[in-house]
Amino acid sequence: MINVTKTFLPPQDEYQAILKRAWLNGWITNRGELVKELEDKLKRHLNTPNIICMTNGTLPIQIAIKALALKGEIITTPFSYVATTSSIVWEGCKPVFVDIHPEYLTIDETKIEAAITERTSAILATHVFGNPCNVDAIKAIALKYNLKVIYDAAHCFGVTYNGKSIFQYGDINTCSFHATKLFHTGEGGAIIFKDKDLYNDLYYHHNFGHDGQENFFGLGINAKMSELQAAMGLAVFPYLSSILENRKRIVDFYNEQLYDTGLKFLKLRDKTHWNYSYYPVIFQNEAQLLKAVKALNSENIFPRRYFYPSLDNLPYIKNQYCEISNTIAASILCLPLYDDLTEKEQINIIELIKTNV
Ligand SMILES: *Cc1c(COP(=O)(O)O)cnc(C)c1O
Image (tube, rainbow, N blue to C red; front, top):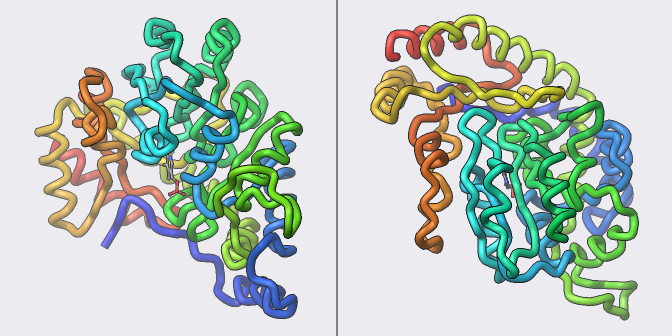
C-alpha cells in the first residue's frame, strides 16, 4: 500500500540510544535535557532565535491566540488544515475567511483590507504546503490597522523566503512535528517567534501558567513536549539533508513527467527556498480528480485530498462561502511523496495519472 506520506523512521538502535539517556536521567518529561537539546539544534538549523517545543502543532496556535490576547474577529484562510480554524473558534474568536489566490493557494492579501472591521484583532494565515504567504503585504496591512500576525507554518520546516527563515516573519509562527510532516517527533510541534519579550509569556502558557512550583504567572495549559518525543526528533534530525534530497528528486521527477498533462501545480512565490513538503496537483474539475483517485485506489495507492473540504464548510461556520477555495479544494490532490518512495512506485503513479486526465 502506498499512502500520500510515510513516516520517516530512524534506525531503531539510534532512537534507543537517545532514549537511554532519558532512562539514565530517570526523566521523561518536564523539559529534560532532550527537549532542550532539540530546541538548541532547531534554533541553529532553522536560524530562528526563539523556539519552544510543544506536544503538537495545534496547541501552539491556541496559545498564540491566547497569549496575544486576541479578541473578536481573526482574518484567516479557508484553505488549510482544520486546526487553523478550530483554534480560532476554540479560543472564542470568530474566524473571518478571506479567499485564496488561485495559484499560490495562500490567503489573497489584496482581499484582506475589505474584510477588516473594528472588531478585527489579527490575521492568522497558513503558508500552504510550505509556500509563503505574501508576508510583506500582510505586514504592511497589519501595521496600518494595528493587527497581530500569526502564521500557521505547520508545513514550513526549513523553508526560507527572501534569504531568511520563513519563521522570522509575523509576530508568532507555529509548526507541526506530527508523524506525517517533513520533520517529526511522532506527535509534536513548536512555537517560534522573533521577539524575545514574548518568551516568558508563551513559556508559562504552555506549562499551566506555572512560575516555579508555587507561583502562577497567569492562565496556562499543558502543551509540553516530552523527552520521548524529543528523542524521536533527535533521532530524525541527522537524516534531514538526505530526506530533503530524496524528496527533491521525487518532486523533480513528478514535475518532469507531469508538466504536459494539463494538470496545474502549486506556484511557489518568488524568492522562496522550498522544502518539498507536499506534491499537490490541480485537476480540471472534481470529476476528473475522482476518476484518477479511483484508478490509483484500485492499485492500492492512496493520495490525499489536502485540503478538503474548504474550511468555510465546517459545521460551525455559517455564511462565509469562498469561491476560489471551494473550487481548489474540489480539484486538488496531494500525490504520494516521502523519503523512500521508489522510482518504480512513482512511475506507476505517474502512468495512472496520465491515463486518467
Ligand atoms: C498538521 C497541521 C496542523 C496541526 O498540527 P498537529 O501537530 O497535527 O496538531 C495545523 N495546521 C496545519 C496547516 C497542518 O498541516
